[in-house]
Length: 302
Image 1 (cartoon, rainbow, N blue to C red):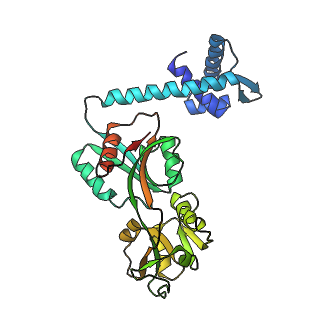
Image 2 (cartoon, rainbow, N blue to C red):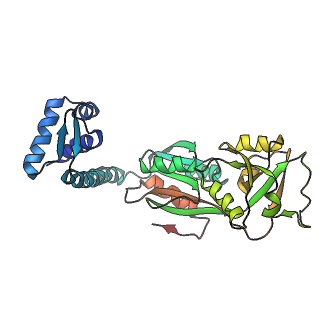
């Protein structure tokens, strides 16, 4: 078998239909069927059972599929690495950023642009779980996300941690239980109608809920919003209060809101840069990760 046959097989295994696999490969059906027959003859096993126009992959086919993915991935990574050798840091870097990403990012990207002017950027903003999926599908090289999320399929580096703040509208009455140093407890916050950042797809959502649950509290959640700018406007309008990281308050500086530190032990909201495990990372992506972590002593995890 050669690399071309493995690519044919991957298309068949993923489409489970000769017609759609041939369309995906931009070839006609007879040559594709012939290539499949040649592979089965060479290996001496049946790779698919035919059920009318549909294919059902066998256990031998599943084994070959895993190896085919690994072999073609290594081939693509080898080609990319060879092309990069000796030409310096250049190319397009696809970056995903969360709506609550590190507030230092614009400055870091400006510094990166100065250091590596031949690199161009494609920056996509989305929620953490969506960004992680895009990294896994190799649509993004790296993504800056909010923890906690499952990191089983990724290498990552922590790029920052910051405290959470309780936020209300300017016209709302100040909480009666605010301490002398201007802090409020989760017990007092649980009495407010809350609109939380995003949905359950965002790690910060779970982090906030965990703070209430750890104290035996049930917060009064009246809404969720994935757009932090709109969330801040909703808070300012009196729709509800919220809990946000410090960077969000800096980014959406709004005179119609008031903020309070949260009293007592609490978790911080952490950001991390993630990239796909066992996958070649371009020089430009490696340099960006180095720059993101250079101001921190926190290690890279893999």
